Length: 103
Image 1: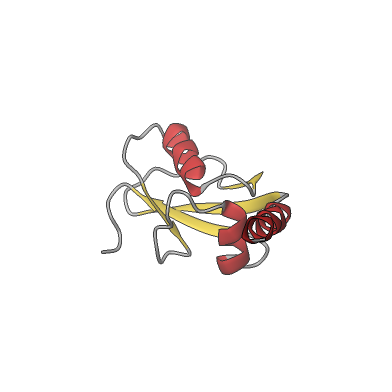
Image 2: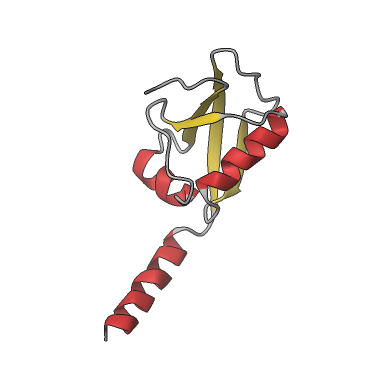
């Protein structure tokens, strides 16, 4: 019974995470600006995928990426979950910096 409940919960989460998330990114400090600061990404993708995309697009090796200018999410967080909890104005606001912005 526990296994079937876990399967049910997993299926519910998978349905909730379907669809695209609109992301708005902004540079902080001396970080280079992204040419396309607003885009959509699959909600099932992990935060680490977004971070990797930004590093690749900006051609940098080190990047600190924050949600709502406040905290650095865990790399395994789903973007849809972050959007549902912290989204604002139908988008997820993400900021990034070359240097650590918050301690």
